[in-house]
Length: 208
Image (cartoon, rainbow, N blue to C red; front, side, top):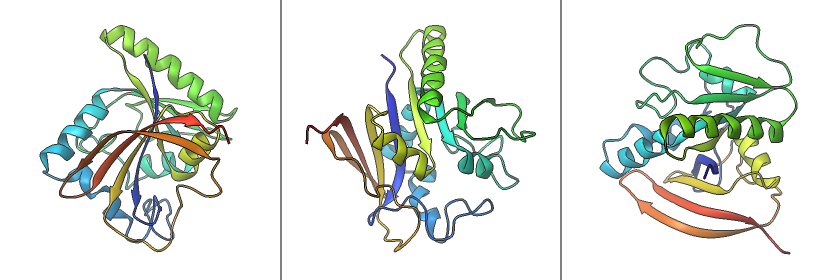
């Protein structure tokens, strides 16, 4: 079964970027510490990254994050989705206006202008097709940025929340939760490593 997975790195004080993120510094001041785990040699970090990349049938991201990864200091042939794994699932971008051109033209981009729920629907369709081709279930990953993942959680679009909790306090930046809709979480796994703590929760809408 294709699941919708919100997957994001977050600081101890709940930020998914540091202060002042922008096209040339997508993670903001000090935000690189959030993704230390993705480039570590810890065997559990490497396993978690490898397995998540391999299970990604389609990936949803917002326009701001697209502008970062497709920008001149963004992804390359060796460092991309999945860090050094450089996976190549279908990518679905939520945007009010598609870009005039794409630097990373070798990747499969779809631009959806009718909102996040429609983008998730398109991504699910792409993941189902990819699952049939590969003969195993693949997931849709809500990659970010923070506003996109937060909106998906508030709208109840995700089935699973995966947090990579970095041992850093950023003090400011882009919050993951801000006036969030109440949710009941069912913890499925906790994996502490030398760089972070990987947390996986099933999501369901709160009855309150």
